[in-house]
Image (cartoon, rainbow, N blue to C red):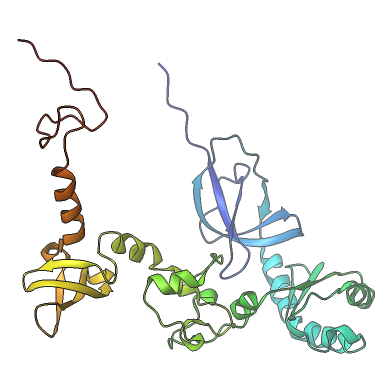
Length: 310
């Protein structure tokens, strides 16, 4: 008797409150559960993360790094201790940066220690690219033996770190549930009929609002089923021209040609007049196979009709 092979599972680990999930092999510690803190090796050294769930491993044979061990109470106390020193480290980085002219217009946003204090990351933002190597070397000497990394981040990452409320009055999406930033373009606002006024489409970070991407695909799919603006359509009230499209309502606003006034018409009540007239014109054209009269053989133009038996 053969038994089906058990699906290999990997643990999804998150290193910050609203951060990406990274997957690790937990076979050496099968007892770990969702919510447990674990120690893992990353490209930035040893880090403490929290298990957020388990998922089947990819079938491509990808090699997952293993979980080194579950976090101990001492690890958790160490993390709390170093988190308490982050504000002091940030102030030190700001004081050191004042000695270098290229940081005059930079904003130092956050300092983050890893759980055991062996790595300190200083994050700053600036409009232009800034070479922070000299500052990083100076901070490495000051905080030795802790390794210091000075990283320049973008405005969206700044908003994510600082949190706060968005223009809608709710907590910012980036600091509550968005783990990654999707590409956003101005055409997403156009497709949804949103005013292109910068105050309407720009977030608190100064970039296009992340929420523009949420319903974009639904708007695109809905618009494909509706006539575009200025299209001639037939309605229960007579012929009209489309002057506005309402994708999520599956309807359009039409100005009637036989009388003054506008009408709100659902898609199922619309008749595409231009398309119908084009089809009627094509149907009256001579048959390309059987002569000058209207074609009633069912053969497509350019295709030889099959001979019939006599």
